[in-house]
Length: 281
Image (cartoon, rainbow, N blue to C red; front, top):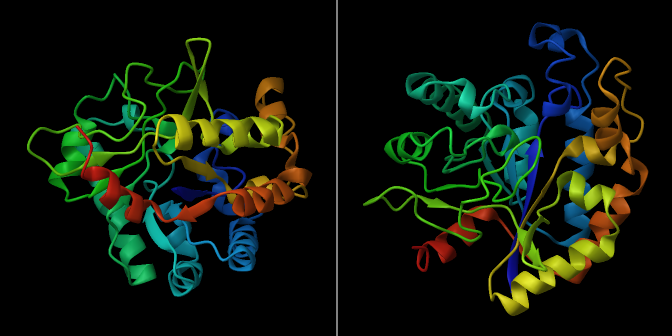
């Protein structure tokens, strides 16, 4: 079973956990670590022989176009993560379309690769944005991986299907939700990110095996370059919960990722989207 591995390319100060603590207008003056961390991820993938998808902010690609080219030259996919990590429900339809077009133009210019995939910042396509998939379809995207079908204090659309589905009638656009597992009738987040970093590795291995073997479906896993960077700056003014989520187990993340690449088979999200579109309802 081929699963999809993905990286949400954003710097340590651009995460949802700090969006009320660090102002966007201050980003340019902060210490940037996204290039060095993304290069470390590329090295880890090269060592493991893994190809993946890098959902990248236009803000990052604008400043580090050579990084985008290195990602493509290594055989990975560059896809869109929006321009500056604004959540989809903060836009109206016209604003969302403008953000999509701005970030896509930057990413394609920097990478030299067509951008056909999108992931909403903080999985912010949900019941509040019924128009978002229609805009993505109209803009010619082949797939979105923007829904977390769980209940969470930060995001979630629990009514969404757990596996690939077609959200726009008459359109080939396929939505690929991040992976969840089932336990005692409950749907558990198991798609990577903080859940992968904070919980024992055995939980993620169990969840992926459940999806692969019981459900017969591929897993879709994600993480961020800053999650393998234990030396990143500390944001002391952020809420305690946000700091705990952000900084816990950073030093062990790279080793966990190496185990993950050994225990399962991986591919890019665009390859998985083409496969799953054939059986998505």
